[in-house]
Image (cartoon, rainbow, N blue to C red; front, side, top):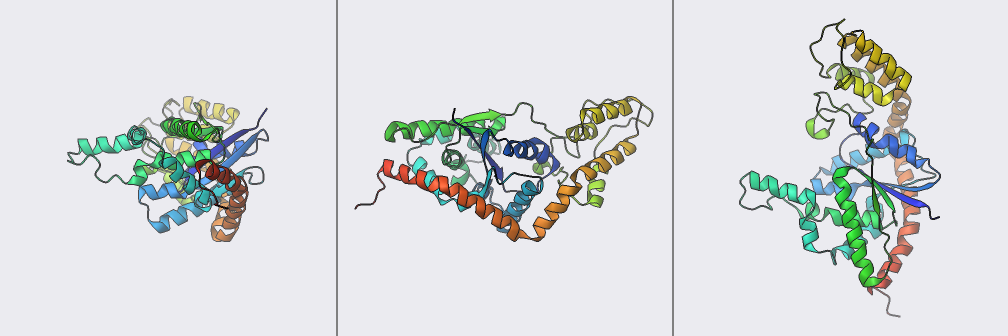
Length: 336
């Protein structure tokens, strides 16, 4: 039986927060240690350009996100951890796929349709106002990311499932013309992936400015946790765990036994201030070893860069000969 090949893309925008950790980083790191899977993890810095991010922010975010995954225990001996922009074969494959991808397929991309709809609802005469070709053709670059490493499984959220399906479409079209060179990937949808609420009760997201940075120092961490929105129930009044942001964050880190103990405290009417203090102490203790390592890596970016270069070299051992096969198939060959 062939080994399954998993590929996970990590967007290099913003600072990692505890929602990222629970929803993506922690399960991704666990998967990196699975001997039955071949895992690729990449920092999607070219994708960040589609969002017109500040150059310094892209660079800093790349460092912070790489350092976070390393500090939290990503197994870079078993898994391949690299930066997208260090693999020139990905951009080459992007153009090859672009040359045979129907415009109609890109017109159906959710991200493009949402941007057009926003323009229409905003009263813009041009439905494509402000839409770059990077946003429009984003699914082609994502397809190249996936297809370059013969990925069979791609863990994604439901909102990204369409992009994996588009990668399949592009691979099938290529294979129809040039032979069965590209592997058809399947999306892996994590139905049990935890989604945490932020400070204001909405989904924790950089867009809402309601996040708790994963490696916030102790004092800022406590200050943020104390800001978490609660209801007006007094100390001594029984409280529901359902819909409680404090409880949900605690449960995301705690053991079943610890969670059961907190459920009893809620039933007994724990004061919100006491619950916030308990959550702070628990999260701080849980994160501290990784935070110390993260701070060390941030202070010494050369260590992070060396790890990414090592991963890029391993990735190109696969990408370079595969691209040579693809080039030959499409007629881009030496003449003698």
